[in-house]
Amino acid sequence: MTGLCYRNVGRNLLVFMGCTCIASICFGQRGPEEELKIPGPETLTVMASDGVPIRCSYYAGGFVQTPGEKKDKPKIEKKPGKEVVPVILLHGWEGRRRDFDELASTLQTRGHAVIVPDLRGHGDSTTYQDANGLLKEIDRDRMRSTDMAGMLLDVEVAKKFFLEKNNAGEVNIELLCVIGADVGAIVAVNWAAFDWARRQLPAFKQGQDVKALVLVSPQESHKGFSLTKALNYPVVQKSLSIMLIVGEEDRTASREAKSIHARLERMRDEPADPKDPDLVYLKPNTTLQGTQLIKFPSLPLRNTIANFIEQRLVRKAGDFPWTDRTGPFGDN
Image 1: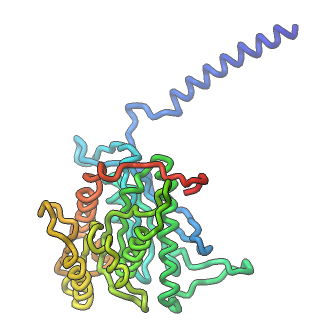
Image 2: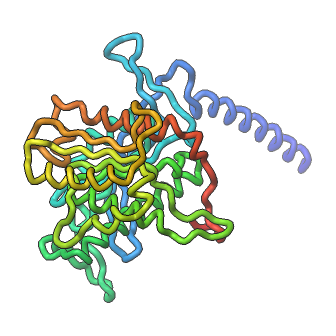
Image 3: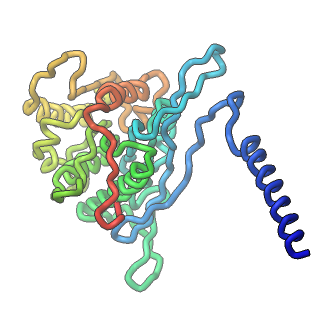
């Protein structure tokens, strides 16, 4: 009697397993007739190393949108995660991550993964817990150069997020691009110098991942927070692919961007291919600056930035192959 019960259970289990397999085939996998869709942005919070929670929007990568057979129906294709370019977008002073919605979406349709943090003191990143566990407000108006330097930690935790995606095979951290507007450009240049100045371990690569910068209306300094020292770092001066964009009709902004470009240009060799320069300077005739310049409909700057990333990173991906960057103790 007992054996019969076991035989019935075994028979029923086989039937159940068979039904489960059929169900997984029917419902757990995307059929060829189903269309691939680009996922919307995900809202997440990451913790900077000094305890400040940083609110971010994440646009998953690997989805390439191209014109379809019908004009109103584009084609979406998936690319291998280990070929995906990760991009960090840094808004300007008194800005927020939503300022980059259009650019982030454009870059996502080109196959890139994008994370956009609200830098500390901005947007939804305006509180922290003190040593006693009490919630404190970050007063942006009282931030000074040392406080603003803490924004480097905001970029660092965004990169750590991408390191985890890299080790999961979803992006290639070796192709990292950072885009910053006005004060965000100061943060981007300083963080790039920091990323390249890390001490390397014999068996473990640390940093040296950012390969391209896009600086929109870059400022030389704000409240004493300056990019002067970072611009003197050799890799920034000579090696990184850099695009500068400024509205030329604003004299102050134009003067600062021109000065930054001149300093970089003096240190650069002539490009081997004039059609593929590693230092690009764009000066559209407008007074618009920062993220407003990028969002302006009649200026195709979002696609221009995407083309720069394509030229300087995607087409050169073979020079920066994907590697597992899990740390020696299992960390990132």
